[in-house]
Amino acid sequence: MIGGILLPTLFFALLAGAATLCGQVVEDFESSLQTMTEPGCNETAQCLIAEDRAANGNHALKLSWDKHQGSHVGGNLASPGVTIADAPGVYEIAARVNFEQCGSEIGPMAIRLVDANNETFQYLANVEGKSGEPGWTEIKWSFDTNKPVSETVKSWGENANETVDFPIKFLGFAVPFHGGKTEGGALLFDDLSVTKVSD
Ligand SMILES: [Ca+2]
Ligand SMILES: [Ca+2]
Image 1 (cartoon, helix red, strand yellow):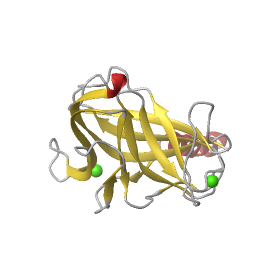
Image 2 (cartoon, helix red, strand yellow):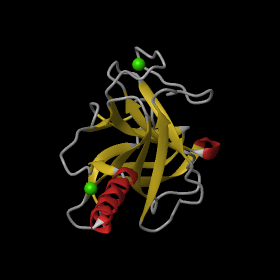
Image 3 (cartoon, helix red, strand yellow):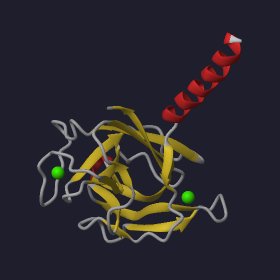
């Protein structure tokens, strides 16, 4: 009889555990979002919602650029997107990224988030060795809303007080170029998910 109670309890506890470990997709880029290239980037840089060539009907955020000299390219939504966090905590954001059309000059990949007072925060993920990799790769960024900036990665914006004013929302992605130049390329981003790791 005890086993009869314990087993279902254990089963639901495991299910609950699985639910907190797997991120929930908050943005699949299937709705008609307005996008923009980051001001100041090379004029060949483009950011738009594009169809995934490998899967008819699926859409992704596409950042593309031609050969040029420059420090980085970035693409944003024209206005803040889905809420990533509305309460303090440590979060992990994941996205599927397609690196098939880019070279090895790309550096750490940035995700940009914007808070309720228009302060932009940036988090970096190591993508070494990913360039040219076929298909989709999962990239993860972690951030702690209690320590939203670091010595090396600062926030910016009109009201940059290095404090997260909730809610914090998705804004865009950027990549720097090693050596300040690129042969051109494109990146696709899809299925943004968020997991709260701890308070
Ligand atoms: Ca999609
Ligand atoms: Ca702020």
